Each structure stands twice: as structure tokens, then as C-alpha cells.
Image (cartoon, rainbow, N blue to C red; front, side):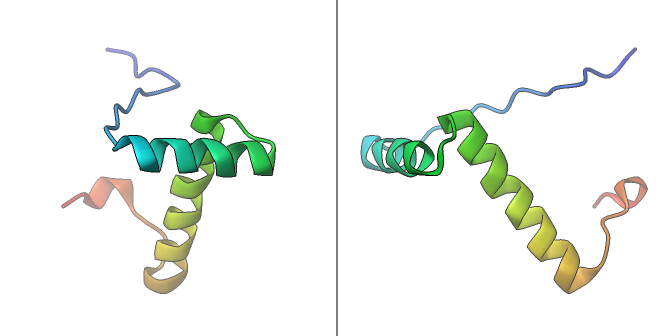
Length: 60
């Protein structure tokens, strides 16, 4: 079976967090989805900086 290029991740947040993310995304010139994607990438970079590259063959 072929892997999809883009994966869907559903995320539930309370209304206040949702509105604040929308605000930040607009301020940064991104869509809400783009802002969440950016934050996830930042988290991955920070993790790999501290722990080294993630080897996807070695998943827990």
C-alpha cells in the first residue's frame, strides 16, 4: 500500500486556544493549519537539536 504524501491529524482544542492560534497565525501571515505545521516543525527541530536526528526505523 502506498503512503500518502500528506497525513491528516485531527486536533481538539478549547475555543480560547483556537482563537489565540488564529490571531497568532494571522499576525505571522499564515493560515491556522500553516501555523500549527510551523509549530510542529519547531518542536521537531528542538528535539533533534537536543537528542540528535530521529531514526524513524527505531520507533518506540
